[in-house]
Image (cartoon, rainbow, N blue to C red; front, side, top):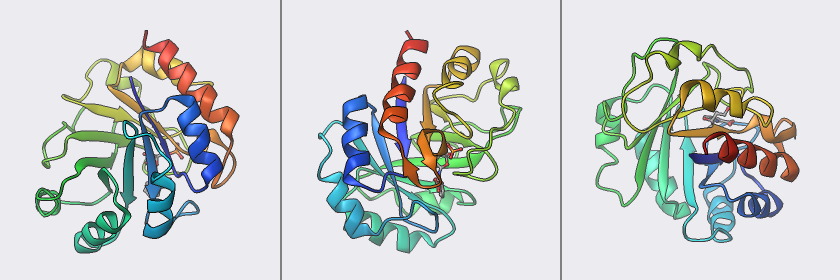
Length: 201
Ligand SMILES: O=C(O)c1ccccc1N[C@@H]1O[C@H](COP(=O)(O)O)[C@@H](O)[C@H]1O
């Protein structure tokens, strides 16, 4: 089970992610209560062990800006979130990064990983980073093809059930490991990763 903690903003958050054993960290580089600059992301990512994937999360900005900013931050992966086309993904294909496509999920499996040239598909709620869950139950019968992650309203108390029900390749969380919007709770991060790992055994 691949576990990503998104919206990390402080050195304390990074330390909690490392302690938790999560696989990936998301730095939101565009408008959000969790937004960080490229410079901040670079400094925070420098604190990560090399095997933790650092992801630049971008939404609603041109792909040229994404390329420049993620490269300036020195991150391992780009998460293009929302209305990005296959051409946008193709425009990043020459970069030495992994590509994640974040989209609003549906209760039917009308997305598949790789359709836009991405390595990982992320099915999220319509409002990313809102903490609001969506109805993912139908994915159990017809999950997307390929390497895909579930996000949107997950938290330590429901991630095990979600994993048991629909068996995603990975899970991603932001609000569910926060005490208030944009403020991560180290204990919730550790609890979330533990719950996800136990459910996937
Ligand atoms: O977290 C944000 O603020 C954000 C902003 C822009 C694009 C994506 C964002 N986060 C993504 O939202 C989900 C987590 O949602 P939740 O808060 O746990 O419900 C995850 O995919 C993040 O990458």
